[in-house]
Length: 105
Image (cartoon, rainbow, N blue to C red; front, side, top):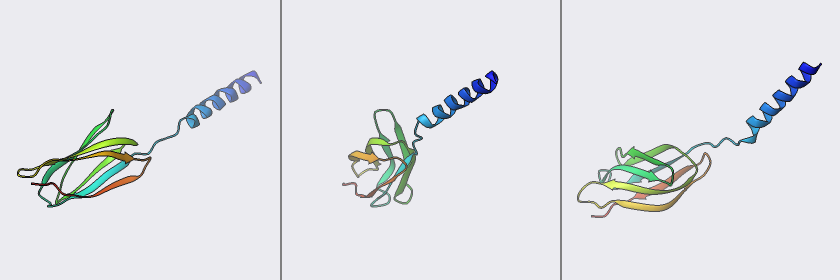
């Protein structure tokens, strides 16, 4: 009887521990660069993360982005200038579409 009570207590503590932490789902950041050959890659920077993705045919997507606030950089090719977007908010499991990014010459 003592072993059964002790076992149940341990299982209860383990179950409570598993459900005490909410599981965050990663989001993503995507967009389109116009003209399609104006940028090489994009970067997403936060206080604790640095992520990058290539630009293919003008499109990009950074997967597995943790919830938080990011600064986005589009690394442009010459003669275009880099583009910076501040305060990109990624929520739990939600994709963020930056829309069209147009580097200037």
